[in-house]
Amino acid sequence: MPKLEEGLDYYMENGRYVFTEHFLTNRGYCCGSGCRHCPYGTKSAEEDDPLLKLRKRQSSTQKEQPE
Image 1 (cartoon, helix red, strand yellow):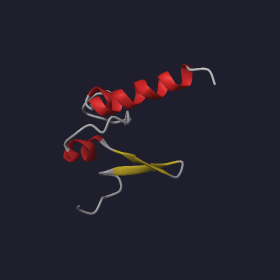
Image 2 (cartoon, rainbow, N blue to C red):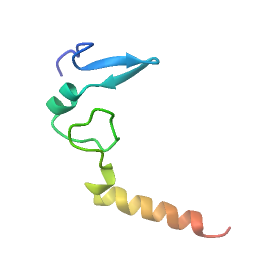
Image 3 (cartoon, rainbow, N blue to C red):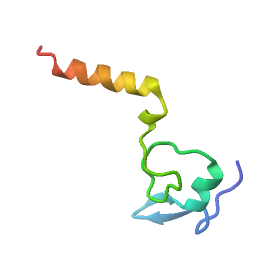
Image 4 (cartoon, rainbow, N blue to C red):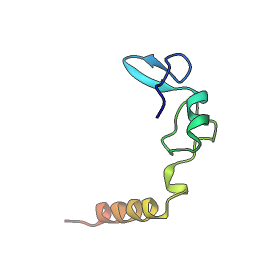
């Protein structure tokens, strides 16, 4: 992976990296994390991954069952 350039690929905010639209576009896909500058929209990873949907459904079902 090429070296990231501050100001072009990311900037720092409160000690955290914020990726720019330039970086995210060059990455070529949406990770589903809801990135602030996502050029692909803010869809969740679950929309693209049926396994993540299943895991979330199973997790919520387990929480609903009384102990």
